[in-house]
Length: 433
Ligand code: HOZ
Image: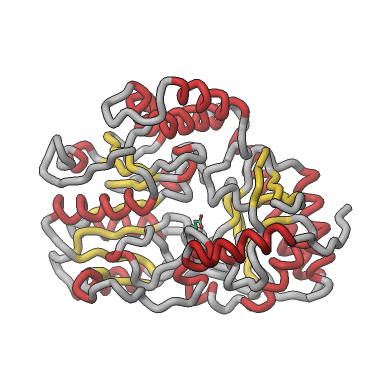
């Protein structure tokens, strides 16, 4: 049973007030500032399994999981011990190390499109690097991205972007030269006809299509039947590359990502989050003939001091080893579906228009009757109500993403009891909205 508690937030308030004088908005990544849900963020002290504790001692069931990496639960002893042992040998080499081979082989074995891989330090870096490669390989400049999809904060992708850009309702960012985004074409997600039209209007000019195969940065939006297949056919027909941004979905939607789950193999893939096990890692990979163009094998330049970092590689390897255990994805699917279906049911029983869905360990929930097929649909959600719901859930010890335009994440550490407590909290909160 949950009880309504007035959160004690004195210490969080003090720290966040000081932070606002030290860092823009008091944070190092915008969505964390809680601007779209109101109230102020809690300041985290520690995390373990499915839980998070703030600096005032409040405990929460955590459905953000550090925005995706914590799929095995926070601070898993198998991962932590390995990181500690690796740290004894040094925190960074800036030179080849065997752990890179091990993680590379694991990624290549798991992800259907990946024949070679390059490790970087974040999803943003992976996506900006893959874009350079797409353009170099095809000798074309234009790309198609989808409204509400987020591929990190590199200039070329800040066009109708999701995540924090959607959360804060920002227009395309100042500081991005028009010339940089002139070659970025956009279409609504799940709209094959719009993509066809763009190819028809720009013959021989489109390097490729990049998308989150399951959108997580405009809330959670799965692909309609036939959409991914249609993109695969269209890109092949026009000599363009298909790129899946699996930073969120990689090793989460299934061990082989969304591409394995849906049986569609793109030409290139970006990864991040889970493959770093909570340390900063991104990656891009794909067809060998394309990846061979990356320096020093080929002429497309991309580099990084901390890339292939031994601690990050270790955390990634141990996380993937845990995910290989039998029953992992069945467990994730079951617990997440129970949560997502339960939230919709509770909302409807308490008189709210709502819809939601889940695949494997990723879920979403909107305050709109739906269905939600794209970002325009997602924007029909009652954002004020979501803000009140978010605050209420926090006060009941449940930590949800502080934005309607972010997917939720579960982990192997979430129990039936956690989900039951969450649904009970949702029932109590929704009754008050
Ligand atoms: N871009 C992340 C979610 N889509 C947010 C990262 C963070 O704030 O830590």
